[in-house]
Length: 90
Image (cartoon, rainbow, N blue to C red):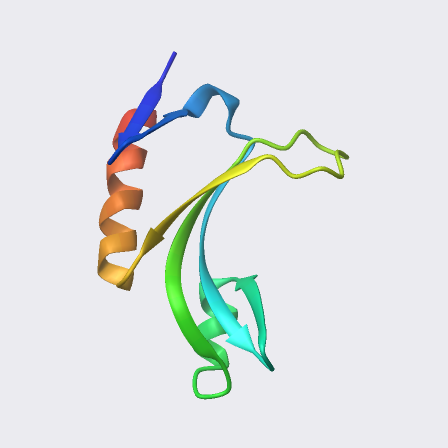
C-alpha cells in the first residue's frame, strides 16, 4: 500500500484513478475547477483562488465523484508537491 502524507491527510495512492493539477477559479460569481492551461489562457478574465492537486478515486462511468483535493497558494508549491507524489511512483 502506498500512502501519501500531506499535513494531516493520508491518501491511499493505490486507489487513485486520476491525478491532476488544476486551478480553483471564480468566473461570473461561480467557483469552478479548471485546467492550469485553461486558467492561464483566460488570465484576466477569471479570478484565481487557489492552485489544487486532485486525487480522483472515482471508477470509470461512476457519476458520484470520490476525490481528495489539496490546496496551494502558489503554482510553485503545487509543482513541488506534485514532484513529491511522483517520487512514490518511481
